[in-house]
Length: 323
Image 1 (cartoon, rainbow, N blue to C red):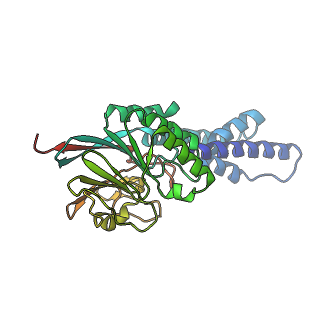
Image 2 (image 1 turned 30 degrees about the vertical axis):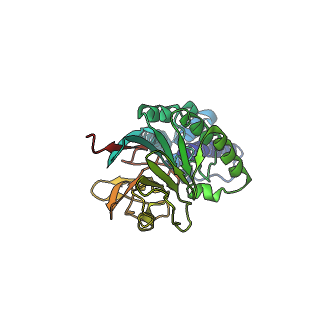
Image 3 (image 1 turned 90 degrees about the vertical axis):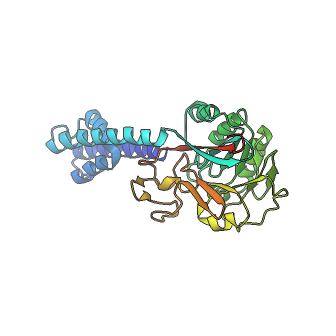
């Protein structure tokens, strides 16, 4: 959505600049430079430039404008189609974990107010197809830069109709702490969402615990050590602290797959501008503790993903005895 907002703004501004320059030409006043007008098209305002040329009958006889503006419009159109596919083509990644019971868990992470159809239908349909026993949400459903509580509520409203939902906050929600966020929590809890920041929830065969992003990882009273211990976290770089809690499985997100995945190298950039983050996506196992890092669904640092489709994680816990 950030890219969409940017293109709308840059094209409106470009159209206005072409109109201003035309008026200045008619009144023989100081002109906007041709280099600047072309540069606006290069920056993404090619459509606004072309409409401005046609509307104001401006620069239509200049070869550089007749060639460059349509050329950059074609290039930006191709880039936008590519970006839309990279940003909205949902993929489902399945992982398996052996235990003494069967359970399917869907993990959703880093939605960042991304739009996946009216009422988040495309996203919810994929979740429903996975037939989960529970849905866990590991933070950053909301984005601080383009906050839309309505989109987040639509997701939760649909998700609770599929399976029980457990939710922890990410860094973006922490930045939004206040009256509006408190009201949002009240609304989704009224829908049936279980908020797990710093809390635990006991299920039949497992215990869920939720971390609070950006704070020291606490010790959890798992209550029953015979049950599978599953920790919901947002920031994967704290893996050592997470596994020291005694968690069997950690589900995390935050890194967005590095935004750009380079074959053979991994994710390029973390949200805190660290290059080639260690835990950018996938499964990591150490000391009998497994961490699964979701590449997430939305963006925050960069408006596009490359070779990094938005991801729904499906964790299938399988009864090893029955198998």
